[in-house]
Image (cartoon, rainbow, N blue to C red; front, side):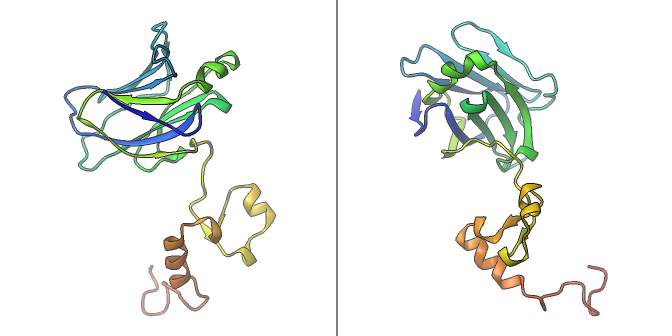
Length: 191
Protein backbone atom coordinates (compact mmCIF):
# COMPACT_ATOMS: atom_id res chain seq x y z
CA UNK A 1 0.00 0.00 0.00
CA UNK A 2 1.43 3.36 -1.03
CA UNK A 3 1.18 6.06 1.66
CA UNK A 4 1.50 9.74 0.77
CA UNK A 5 1.45 12.53 3.34
CA UNK A 6 0.02 15.91 2.40
CA UNK A 7 1.44 19.16 3.67
CA UNK A 8 -1.62 20.75 5.30
CA UNK A 9 -3.82 18.66 7.57
CA UNK A 10 -7.32 18.24 6.19
CA UNK A 11 -6.59 20.13 3.01
CA UNK A 12 -5.48 18.93 -0.42
CA UNK A 13 -6.46 18.08 -3.94
CA UNK A 14 -5.15 14.87 -5.48
CA UNK A 15 -5.15 14.36 -9.26
CA UNK A 16 -4.96 10.75 -10.41
CA UNK A 17 -5.60 8.27 -13.20
CA UNK A 18 -7.38 4.94 -12.93
CA UNK A 19 -6.20 2.44 -15.53
CA UNK A 20 -8.51 -0.51 -14.79
CA UNK A 21 -12.22 0.16 -15.31
CA UNK A 22 -13.17 -3.43 -14.40
CA UNK A 23 -12.30 -2.95 -10.73
CA UNK A 24 -13.38 -0.05 -8.55
CA UNK A 25 -10.90 2.79 -8.13
CA UNK A 26 -10.31 3.19 -4.38
CA UNK A 27 -8.41 5.87 -2.44
CA UNK A 28 -8.18 6.31 1.34
CA UNK A 29 -7.72 9.50 3.35
CA UNK A 30 -6.38 8.53 6.79
CA UNK A 31 -5.44 10.17 10.06
CA UNK A 32 -2.07 9.75 11.82
CA UNK A 33 -2.98 6.37 13.36
CA UNK A 34 -4.31 4.97 10.06
CA UNK A 35 -7.45 3.87 11.95
CA UNK A 36 -9.85 6.67 11.05
CA UNK A 37 -10.57 8.31 7.75
CA UNK A 38 -12.51 8.21 4.51
CA UNK A 39 -12.69 5.59 1.79
CA UNK A 40 -13.49 6.99 -1.69
CA UNK A 41 -14.75 4.39 -4.16
CA UNK A 42 -15.24 5.27 -7.82
CA UNK A 43 -17.13 2.89 -10.08
CA UNK A 44 -18.31 3.40 -13.65
CA UNK A 45 -21.71 4.36 -12.22
CA UNK A 46 -21.00 6.53 -9.18
CA UNK A 47 -18.76 7.84 -6.43
CA UNK A 48 -19.26 6.44 -2.94
CA UNK A 49 -17.59 7.75 0.20
CA UNK A 50 -17.51 5.88 3.52
CA UNK A 51 -16.27 6.57 7.04
CA UNK A 52 -13.64 3.87 7.56
CA UNK A 53 -14.36 3.39 11.30
CA UNK A 54 -18.16 3.59 11.39
CA UNK A 55 -18.99 2.43 7.86
CA UNK A 56 -21.30 5.45 7.48
CA UNK A 57 -21.92 6.32 3.82
CA UNK A 58 -21.74 9.98 2.75
CA UNK A 59 -24.13 10.21 -0.17
CA UNK A 60 -24.46 12.89 -2.82
CA UNK A 61 -27.93 12.38 -4.25
CA UNK A 62 -26.94 14.34 -7.39
CA UNK A 63 -24.04 12.00 -8.21
CA UNK A 64 -24.88 9.94 -11.29
CA UNK A 65 -21.43 9.22 -12.71
CA UNK A 66 -17.97 7.95 -11.86
CA UNK A 67 -15.19 6.47 -13.96
CA UNK A 68 -15.41 7.21 -17.68
CA UNK A 69 -14.26 5.11 -20.63
CA UNK A 70 -12.24 7.86 -22.29
CA UNK A 71 -8.57 7.39 -23.11
CA UNK A 72 -6.45 9.76 -21.02
CA UNK A 73 -9.21 10.62 -18.53
CA UNK A 74 -8.06 11.70 -15.10
CA UNK A 75 -9.86 12.47 -11.86
CA UNK A 76 -9.48 14.58 -8.75
CA UNK A 77 -10.49 14.46 -5.09
CA UNK A 78 -10.50 17.64 -3.03
CA UNK A 79 -10.62 17.71 0.77
CA UNK A 80 -11.51 21.02 2.43
CA UNK A 81 -11.71 20.59 6.21
CA UNK A 82 -12.20 24.32 6.80
CA UNK A 83 -15.51 24.21 4.90
CA UNK A 84 -16.21 20.56 5.85
CA UNK A 85 -16.41 19.53 2.17
CA UNK A 86 -15.21 16.65 0.01
CA UNK A 87 -15.53 16.93 -3.77
CA UNK A 88 -14.64 14.59 -6.62
CA UNK A 89 -14.38 15.45 -10.30
CA UNK A 90 -13.31 14.37 -13.76
CA UNK A 91 -10.65 16.25 -15.73
CA UNK A 92 -9.23 19.61 -14.76
CA UNK A 93 -9.70 20.27 -11.03
CA UNK A 94 -12.33 23.00 -11.03
CA UNK A 95 -15.84 23.23 -9.62
CA UNK A 96 -17.27 23.02 -13.14
CA UNK A 97 -15.95 19.43 -13.54
CA UNK A 98 -17.22 18.20 -10.16
CA UNK A 99 -19.37 15.03 -10.15
CA UNK A 100 -19.65 14.46 -6.37
CA UNK A 101 -19.86 16.82 -3.41
CA UNK A 102 -20.58 16.15 0.24
CA UNK A 103 -20.72 18.74 2.99
CA UNK A 104 -20.05 17.32 6.44
CA UNK A 105 -21.55 18.56 9.70
CA UNK A 106 -19.69 21.28 11.66
CA UNK A 107 -18.88 18.74 14.39
CA UNK A 108 -16.95 16.69 11.77
CA UNK A 109 -14.36 19.47 11.31
CA UNK A 110 -11.82 18.03 13.85
CA UNK A 111 -12.13 14.60 12.17
CA UNK A 112 -11.45 16.11 8.73
CA UNK A 113 -8.60 18.30 10.01
CA UNK A 114 -6.78 15.18 11.22
CA UNK A 115 -6.70 13.53 7.80
CA UNK A 116 -3.10 13.69 6.62
CA UNK A 117 -2.37 10.51 4.64
CA UNK A 118 -3.46 9.47 1.18
CA UNK A 119 -3.36 5.76 0.37
CA UNK A 120 -3.90 3.78 -2.77
CA UNK A 121 -3.76 0.04 -2.65
CA UNK A 122 -3.72 -0.88 -6.32
CA UNK A 123 -1.22 -0.30 -9.11
CA UNK A 124 -4.15 0.59 -11.38
CA UNK A 125 -4.32 3.99 -9.63
CA UNK A 126 -1.56 6.44 -10.51
CA UNK A 127 -1.20 9.66 -8.50
CA UNK A 128 -0.33 12.45 -10.94
CA UNK A 129 -0.14 15.44 -8.61
CA UNK A 130 -1.08 16.62 -5.13
CA UNK A 131 -2.05 20.26 -4.70
CA UNK A 132 -1.90 22.00 -1.32
CA UNK A 133 -5.15 23.88 -1.80
CA UNK A 134 -8.61 22.37 -2.06
CA UNK A 135 -10.97 23.30 -4.89
CA UNK A 136 -13.35 25.78 -3.27
CA UNK A 137 -14.76 28.12 -5.89
CA UNK A 138 -15.30 28.59 -9.60
CA UNK A 139 -12.39 30.18 -11.44
CA UNK A 140 -13.25 32.51 -14.31
CA UNK A 141 -12.14 31.37 -17.74
CA UNK A 142 -11.83 34.91 -19.13
CA UNK A 143 -8.67 36.96 -18.54
CA UNK A 144 -8.25 40.73 -18.53
CA UNK A 145 -5.28 43.02 -18.17
CA UNK A 146 -5.14 44.71 -14.78
CA UNK A 147 -5.72 48.14 -16.39
CA UNK A 148 -8.99 46.88 -17.87
CA UNK A 149 -10.33 45.21 -14.70
CA UNK A 150 -12.84 46.70 -12.31
CA UNK A 151 -13.40 45.67 -8.72
CA UNK A 152 -16.85 44.45 -9.79
CA UNK A 153 -15.25 42.11 -12.38
CA UNK A 154 -13.25 40.45 -9.61
CA UNK A 155 -16.09 40.45 -7.06
CA UNK A 156 -18.47 38.74 -9.49
CA UNK A 157 -15.66 36.35 -10.55
CA UNK A 158 -16.35 37.27 -14.14
CA UNK A 159 -12.68 37.75 -15.09
CA UNK A 160 -9.32 36.79 -13.68
CA UNK A 161 -6.31 39.12 -13.75
CA UNK A 162 -3.49 38.13 -16.07
CA UNK A 163 -1.20 37.94 -13.04
CA UNK A 164 -3.11 34.85 -11.81
CA UNK A 165 -1.93 32.87 -14.83
CA UNK A 166 1.23 30.77 -14.74
CA UNK A 167 4.31 32.42 -16.30
CA UNK A 168 3.98 30.32 -19.45
CA UNK A 169 0.29 31.22 -19.76
CA UNK A 170 1.09 34.91 -19.21
CA UNK A 171 3.57 34.76 -22.11
CA UNK A 172 0.96 33.14 -24.34
CA UNK A 173 -1.64 35.72 -23.30
CA UNK A 174 0.80 38.56 -24.07
CA UNK A 175 1.43 37.11 -27.54
CA UNK A 176 -2.23 37.29 -28.55
CA UNK A 177 -3.80 40.04 -26.42
CA UNK A 178 -2.81 43.15 -28.35
CA UNK A 179 -5.54 45.60 -29.42
CA UNK A 180 -4.78 44.94 -33.11
CA UNK A 181 -4.70 41.14 -32.68
CA UNK A 182 -8.21 40.49 -34.06
CA UNK A 183 -9.45 37.08 -35.17
CA UNK A 184 -12.72 38.11 -36.81
CA UNK A 185 -11.33 40.62 -39.32
CA UNK A 186 -12.43 41.05 -42.97
CA UNK A 187 -10.43 37.96 -44.02
CA UNK A 188 -12.20 35.73 -41.46
CA UNK A 189 -15.43 37.53 -40.40
CA UNK A 190 -17.29 34.41 -39.26
CA UNK A 191 -14.81 33.59 -36.47
